[in-house]
Every structure is written in structure tokens, then in C-alpha cells.
Length: 335
Image (tube, rainbow, N blue to C red):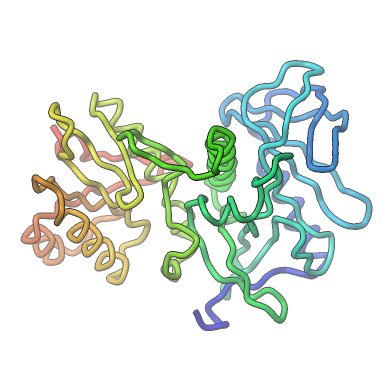
């Protein structure tokens, strides 16, 4: 990716302070209570009051650590009062400048939009829990960031001013929690997925995947659309799963793939062409040709939809309602 198209890490102290304040403010409407705990982190244990959210199912603790960094610890599950709890992940920012030892960072695109990114430094208090585990197993939106004089591969967590930012962060935290859980269960830290189930940690691209499409803002919504479509299909009684190559698919009574869904967060020609090729190529080796469905955020030109129909691809349009997705024509399409 050319430098002019890359995200650029923020290093100005005033800008970091401003956007860090917005980062914390975003979570306040979701907080139900503060719970005193003994909080574990890579440096030891500290007494803290974590802010718990019932609707998100996560807690957050934030503090400024001397003159070095802003500390933001996250965890899943409601803790008991005075209990000892581990930190699932930290999304910390340097107070000023660029510090590649810190996992989190703020970055801007050429339009001035602010993104929260992660370098993959996740601690776990156990050998093998770190950046290599993250890069080998985290799936989401990856991009190359202008990182001072260097270029760094980072995972996008979310768009700071998006109405869906808090859900984007929460999904990131759940994925890290799942990756750590799976690694604890494996003596060799090799995560495999044999059974056909829906796994949120499989949503998105791998570290070594080709560069994400240029509309990074919309790409940050991809995981939420997949999750909401899974919920909608599940509510209609379908058995739904995903894997390393398909966003979602339904299974028939014989356990075979019946419908395959590919989410496209924008309706650019490049995005639709990529998703069309992806659907077709990944259906070739299946024993039975499934129904192929392209899900997009707005209606497309009728001539383009007719071309997709000739290829055996149906279109499912979705719309955002606040921070969740509605699939108004889903019942007509699948029933």
C-alpha cells in the first residue's frame, strides 16, 4: 500500500490526550456499576474498581500510568466483589510519541478519521501468550500503518467516532479472550477447528492475508454484520456455522452446507467483485452447490443484480439501526 493511503500513527501529546478522552467517554453510557477487585496484569496485581457493563458483557479499567502510558484493561464476565480477576487484554496508548512496546495506538487516515489499532502485544502470564500467538491466530481487519520511519502491520480495532465503536472494541476483547482460552487448552498452542460451529474468533482475515480493501472504516463493521446475521439466522431456527474461508453458512438436515453468505461492508465495484469471486471459488469443491448469498448495506443497480443472479448469487440487503443490523428481506430469501 502506498504511504498516502496508509493509516499514520498519532504521536502528538495533545491529540493522543484528546482522542483517549473520547475513547473512555464512549463506554460511559454502557456502564452499570463499578466493582472492587484484585486485578491481575503482566506486572502483578493491583486493587482496582472495574467498570462493568451488562449489555456488553465486559469490564474496563482505565488509569494513567506515570508519564509513560494510558492503561486500559479489559476482561469478560462479571467479577465478584473483591475477587482476583485476570486481564483479557490491554489497549494502551503512549502519552506522547511512538512506543512500539505498547500494544495499542491511535492512528489517522488521510481523511482525518481516527482509528484504534493494536500491535499484537497481548500478555497472559504464561509462556506462549504474546505477539506470536496474536499474529498466528487473530482474525479481523489487518493493515499496514505508517509508524514513524517504519511500516508496521497492525490489527484495526475500530473507528473512534463510529456509533458502533464500543461494539467493535467489545468484539475485539471477546476474540482475544477466546484465542487465549483455546491456547490454554492446547499443549502445542495449535488452534484447530474441526467441528462445524459458529466461532466469533474466525471472523475476518488472517495476519498474512493480502492488504485489506481501502475502505477501512467500513471494513471495521464487517465482524459486527457477520455476528448480527448469525443471530438473525439462528433466531429463524437455522443451524449456522463459519470457517476460515466463509463468513457464514447454514447446514441442512444431512449436515451439508445449504447457504453460504459473504458480507460486503460497502457497495464499491471492487468490493462486490472480490466477494463474488470469493463465493464462487469457495463453492467449487463442495459436494453439492449451495445457494450463494451476497449481503450488502444498500441496494445495487438492477443490471448488476441481474448479472449476479446469472452467476447463481442472491443479494441480501442490510441496514444499520443504531449499532445493530437489520436484514429486512431475510425471511423472504431463506424461507
